[in-house]
Length: 387
Length: 247
Image (cartoon, rainbow over all chains, first blue to last red; front, side, top):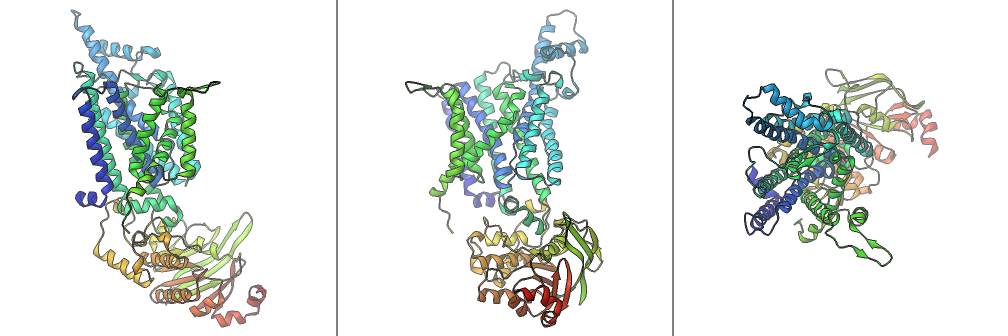
């Protein structure tokens, strides 16, 4: 079945081929190969792959199903927090045990727990473990939470919103309110997740203290590439065939689909939830590479950027989302990171750190007006479908 | 002929305006029925009520052999009960091919997971061919439905109704914007469909209704004004006054 599915979707095969080549090239250029690519750049590329994955999810929910969610970064963030809790707990536990090792009297378990709590929550003036950290000592459970928490949240939120037939811009506002509420909650010191400090030191993987970051960064890069590949195939499968037909039909004329006998709300809920889960997995891979997560990451603006990436890359084609996310986010870090040379105009000097957002905004408007198919639309000129 | 749908004393108001006023209609199976009436007579609202888009303020709608009530059922549940609807403006999914449009309408399980794991069957493909043949679109199966002419879109939508295999077809102004030749084909299509099921056609065009040659219900201000053969209702003085007299 998978064989024939891939055969019927050559763009998926091309994508997987491109992704494999990209992985090989990066390996060859990194420290594992000739060593001309810095570890931090490998991390940037790995993070970019995670952004591509959430962009593909966004394309399915927006480009294919017509739900302009401005809240998918909330799920991305929750995924990051869930895995970050284990990373932080396990690493702090290691440090605390090391420091106790020099004592002649072995510490009681309570002393160890208190010391870990002090280390983690001292920054927000507390040493108590909040309830939500109950499973933080178990990697397996925290990985389950990566999938479960966003899944349940998306299911509940979607059920309430879709059941009331909230659509269009109202739904967008609602999703934005959700992500804003979550960000504001996390900003509080007593949220149990260290307030605006967020979780940090996530790049140190417990158990691999002696492994150099160059190796860890490559491992995460591979994991991210694998996740993008699998996610891409999953979504290509969902959006092809009859399921794809129905969700595109819902995007184009929801009420007509109802009169065909389809329960539109179930379909939206399915798409919303599965994309939320994939977004969370992308986040869980992203933040160990970023090293830090804080509530600002899930501010509404992040989810709006996500929509901009997908729009610039081209909606309704999965590779468009990948191109958009990779192109815009890499360009963004080049411009804001001081990579782009300032342009002196004599009377004024254009500093790209200030003007990049203006440029991005203008290109978003230009793409929407003049190239609604986005960058991905260029492929239509290359590949003429036999009719 | 047994009663398939019974609308009994249904009323609905929008902001104080009574769009449907104590309306009672019975549709048999099989039957071809034309519903006519001036603008604002409540023809479209009548369809909205039956298909679950609009909830009536009062009245009963009973359906089928077991006399179940359609009130309180969602649009998709009503559609699965076997009521198909064609809109006035042709609404096909223009971004998708004729085959995809028909495949979506085929009578198959409608749950998300059933659809996700759906596999094309030989019977399904044969049924699509058969319907495409009936609506004259056999050669256009791989075309995007957005490329079809207005008349072909109307047929495709009727074809999607047939693919649903409903017991009752509600058809809103099928002949609007069609050429004479296209109208004839549409009439034949509807008459053939009505041999085995109930078909209710809402229409403005008297010539088209005459060609359908069936029982006619005249709506006026949300209730039934007259019912019977076309000759019978057009001879009715009240019908002439409120409707025909104006044209």
